[in-house]
Image 1 (cartoon, rainbow, N blue to C red):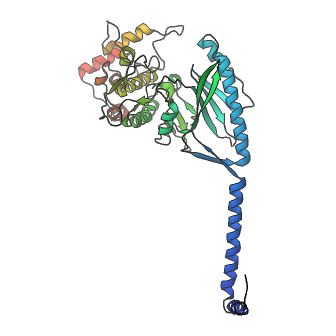
Image 2 (image 1 turned 60 degrees about the vertical axis):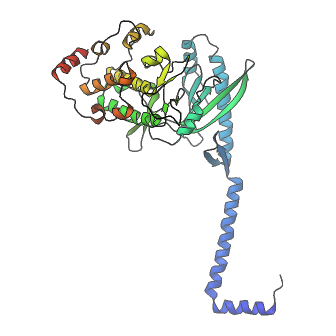
Image 3 (image 1 turned 30 degrees about the vertical axis):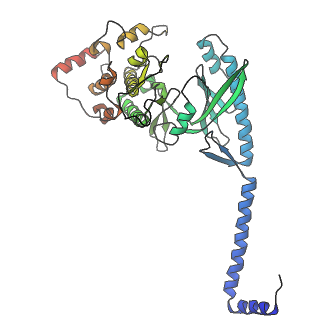
Length: 402
């Protein structure tokens, strides 16, 4: 660029008249170029991105950490696949569960939590020390259940539903057959609920039920039924202030009961032929009898959860741990000989009338007579209010005490 004498003279005059202006202009230019250099360097050398299977969430990490994360995760997944292939070849569930519990993946950052025939769940520790849960699912192409799709749709939607960080699908060949694996990362929950550690404490039971009802309400409002509600599928997370928030987990059977254009009906039922989703002894009568699944099936399971927590054990098992199907079928009204409520239930002496009423209401044999989740949120036990019993009701209550 050619600089003329007049231009140079003008620049000198400007410097004499406005020295401060020239100084700030020079400093600003230097600062701008410095920031641009830092930004470009950061883009080139510092970050990689990982997307979930839907591309809806991006996790950015340091380049070196990303390489380590990639390597550790790949090795962990390969280890899980290798060991689960061996375990699933064992003949009985007891042997499978024992072998799973005895896994020793060290130095890989995974710890076995639980397994079924189609799932394996591990605690996974990331490079920065954050604990997450890694779940492997053997996908059934004949099933309409897609846990990864459901979890992605529920991501960050409600505080009483476990958060899904990301998910992916992988194909492989096992024994000459194609197999699709679903991998899902969940937030880690540090509080496990059992009928023993709750120890029949009604304040704890109330806190659990309130949060569980809120989570169920969100599902039901969005036309989804959980379909495997039970004690083991509620877990707690400790907040910074020491309080605990309880969340629903495990959406392996969760699916819509109504289509988007259907009018909402709290008593809606969906027949799923050949299936009766859920876990013994939390399954509702209509599920076992007719493969009917709905919102009120979740309500039955909620009542069973409350009942078992209140008595400190899970009934309907024989002394050696075998399922007592006959007793449960009689309790659920599936036998010719059915029992009235005052003979169906047994409670501990300290069980309050409010909790007793909550449980019996949830576990009505006819699903249309069970309250909805919205109605249960207004129940006296949930609101910590007293029920005033009539004289005949008091007699019935005494007959339920064990």
